[in-house]
Length: 99
Image 1 (spheres, one colour):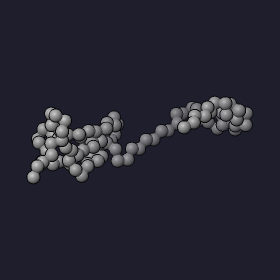
Image 2: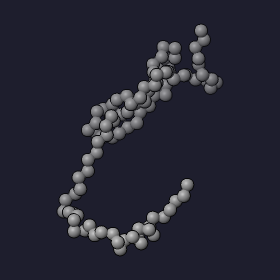
Image 3: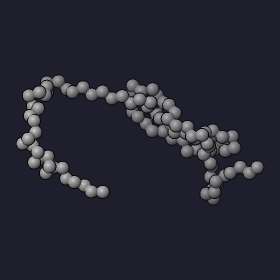
Image 4: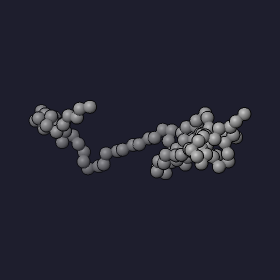
């Protein structure tokens, strides 16, 4: 990766840059529109519910990303994985069902 400083290049090109000053209306603020499609205030990322996991692991690994915009819907599922999270025992080993 190489970083190139842009300040010297911009300073060298400044004399040939067009003057936009007379075309800019500074009397009113520039409009800014934001649209976040498919986003809610709380965007949940969940694991599939599974009856083999203990009740204590019901929402294991679930989380959400907040978007503090009151104009959005309150919450939605951004992603639900097609498999359940695996609970872990006190010794750090996964609790897998034995058939």
